[in-house]
Image (cartoon, rainbow, N blue to C red; front, top):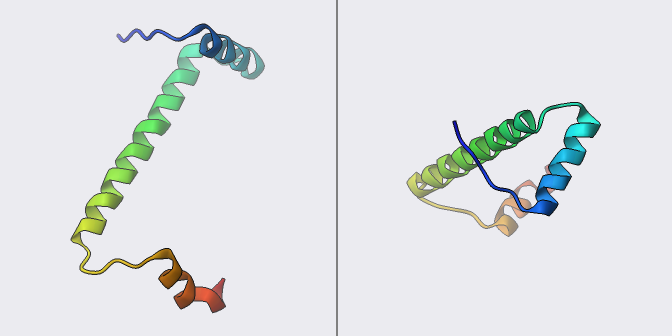
Length: 70
């Protein structure tokens, strides 16, 4: 079991969304937290993979290489 404290504005926004979607606040928070955790894990996996790469490329280099395909 976990408890969190929200400021009044966030609590009101959460309540509004819960009313609109007809989902519980707990469900909305669980879904948001699950997405946040997945995003963070993806980010850390990408950073780890990049560290293993021998060469990295700038965005300009990638765009130049694939300009005809975009």
